[in-house]
Image: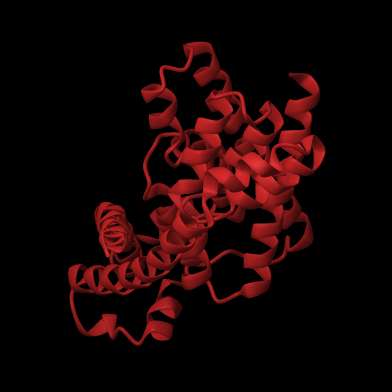
Length: 285
């Protein structure tokens, strides 16, 4: 019973931290949909190569809600898939606090953060280039209103504050439920034991580390970072796992964006780039 209460408390605490990010994101989206001028909207929709660069740099900061905010902005048509991918790859989740608390060398921290930014920006720019080539005739548009219609929130009947609050509460409930189930599963599976066992198989472990990193739970980034610092995981496993750690962003993406084919492609791209990055890091270091 005590264990369950601890899990419940941890899940509640982590979820509450997301509320400001989600509320401000939805507030900005509602403003764009209802108040912002056409020039402002066009500027955001046509940010071009700047989007992945900005996303890659901002994503590296330890903000648990940033990947969730990016997922919402992508689902609403505000940012490109490249910008979203850059954020997912560069986001540090709980990695940076663990590195600092464990007194990792400053050089190690800088290399890891720098590598995540470079990989995120490069992959994001490449993804946007592919999208422009494949669908060059299609003009991107905001489709925030479509999200409102799917959720039956009746946003048009109230203020943008009410709409933002309504969306935030709805998505927070979803995140809390899934996170609680994931935390229970992680507790009983034993994340550290699982990762330690896999690390005995050098090449295979990079692919598995990437899969573990995809788990939308802070336990993944915490475990991978700690085991790397303890010498249990190789540099390749560490990079593969931490590049794939998009935090709660993947949960929000699959909840808010109904184009499952695009979601699957983003997930596959995130995993593929993470594994490739891990293999390259293993060879170089």
